[in-house]
Length: 574
Image (cartoon, rainbow, N blue to C red; front, side, top):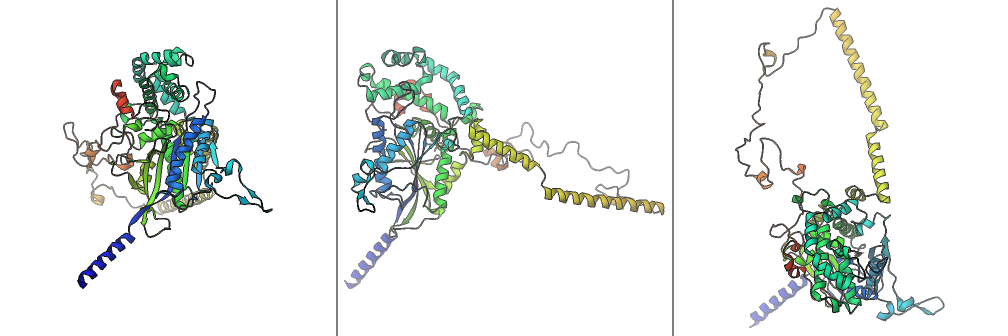
């Protein structure tokens, strides 16, 4: 009995010891891209403005972020982030300059860090002993950086804006046979929409597939703000209009297949490529500064960056058809940078890079029922929603825009900052072509020595000739060396055997070259990484290796199945 008690105590000790070393997740940084909220459409106003309803949606969405990352109500709270008082050094907010986007950022921050009075935080005391509080019940003022067309940072938020090649690619799509076919197939549908809901806003010729996005935005606005719309249209009409708008945005922002043959279309996903740059910049700085900077990075913009990134990182595939669609208004793409730490260590130090992981989450809604849903990246199986940061970094690097200069060149852009960047680059190139003074001096000295040596050699030969001492007879050379006779000819090959080692009827190599679809010609180097074939190409990534197939290419009767949309609601989430 005594021995059994000892054994049980020992087993209990092992269990406790095992619990002491149980690992838990610690979040060090969060990057989120959020689309603007419900706003007045361009067809009703000269500039789109955020509505009160849209502002409330963004504040509600931010409350979910607050619970998960800020207030401490979740295990995923960001390390060393203030739960009550906003520190603008911890939360970086970047937005485009249009009102609907800036307003969305402001409303979101109201929900992320509410007024201090609403949290019963006492007022501060000034020198005369009185209490003071910021207006609006202790409103907390965030630092929101807005980037306009003259700012090179604007490409981090909306890389497609001011990109001439992107505009050219969209024009190429609009003039394609595909669009002409879709326009014919949907002509009756848009004529119906015009008669029942659009006639007071659009002329009849404008009610076509090429205006699918603004038409859908107008209908979505009317669903929320005009209760008479659904007396004319049914839910299916609204959903179909959304699906066609999704198709247009996807087709003009996705990564083009290498078989498409379009040289212009490579610019289509530029907004996703610059968004990838933003993610890398934020996480790299967080790592460099050991988690003291970029704790939370929030970007606010339009649909294009999110849709393009979905294509580039393999989110949009046949197993996840919802990523072929746009985010709902106020929806977010979220990336978490986290590590695994000992549960007994309440205040862990910043981890090494080999213990940092990235997880992608979709927050596609604004109410309190919307969840942060994990999805796998780069064609991994659903069970691998998290990947090491080193892998994440290397994957994004393959398509992220490396510099402002690269964006300017790829976009053939004519912005103010591009003129400055490219002029500076040209000046540097001309400077590099010039010869440095020190190098010129060295070359001059060497040239002088060579001239002196040659002059001395010539004088020596002249002296020897005059003394009757002819120079030694040189060797005839060749493979016989000094023993070669004048009648001997060097070996020559009229047709080198390695030049045509592969005949027309020979079979391709079954080695590594077969994997890249090339045939080996003797010692010729093919398929090497120096020739650009060793770099991994992220194109239409699929877990099963199949090419990503957009649901929009299927028969239009099936559009409801793939759209991922639910019946129309005043507040909607997927």
